[in-house]
Image (cartoon, rainbow, N blue to C red; front, side, top):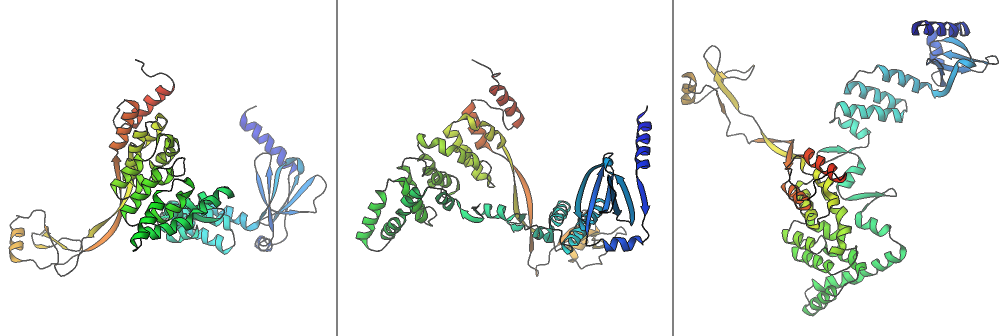
Length: 445
């Protein structure tokens, strides 16, 4: 028996066991009466779907449903594969969503309909489609809870993360605050105990009293307890004076353990002073390299390409081959930049098809030119026309976003140093070589 014949036979069996009783009421009235009720969905074994309101009056072994169009369907239970109870509004949404036009405007209109009818999840679905079609749709972004940050729309979590905050138990905290929250009570108490002492000594060291300055500086320089790192960072890590930040780096450099490492890594990557960046990197001891490694790897994904290059320099110095795949990914990076460009506001003049001289913009009228410039145009000595800027009007600018690709030579240098190989900026060649190395297929000397 052919596939088509089998299908027609099965449909015949279904139709013989399916009883349709037309309702005696007007279909529109039935739909209106069901507007506030639940709409049920029956899925048949053959894949068909019947939507409407399930009736409780069907006989034993049968299922009866009043359809959305006003009819009544009676099915034997053996035909039913699944039954779901859903809001009629959800059913109406599903119908609208199947036929909505593929445009931002159409999806926005459906999202507004969802808002008016209290369909939150469905509204979110439509708003996400709106921003796919129109990434700059402000109302859709705000409906999704997005915020504008540096000219781009992003979730609140992403925006706060860009500002250095992390979400912890429903609140946004800094990395330092998170570290404190996640520590044991005893460790937290030991660190907190340093805060009043460090603040006092720092106030002495930066005050006017010469004796107090000497005493405060001596007390700070004598600190070698890693538990004091958060307190020192609180007053010194982001100080406006470079000499204070440099003193902080030197203090950390004499402390054991992992607690100084995040601050040393951050300063080596982000501080504006190159001396401080170099000193911070130098102060990471071999015993602290393991803790520093993942922090520098994270630096390879920074938005600032200069930070990527600094992270690559550090990884090259650490010389750990485990970071080779990360360096390969960072060989060539693309970043977005906002630049201001002038808005052309001058008038363009040239020769018209009839040989006259005038403004060449479509729909423009003749303008006035200096006689010598008009003479050059008429004699064909300015074949490409001329643009005259009015000296009375200030130049206007607009901000645009441009993409730029960077070939990061610091990343390449780190790869060369760690692997003693050189495949240039070809990610594919590096990846093929690295895969062969991992499988033991590389060349042996």
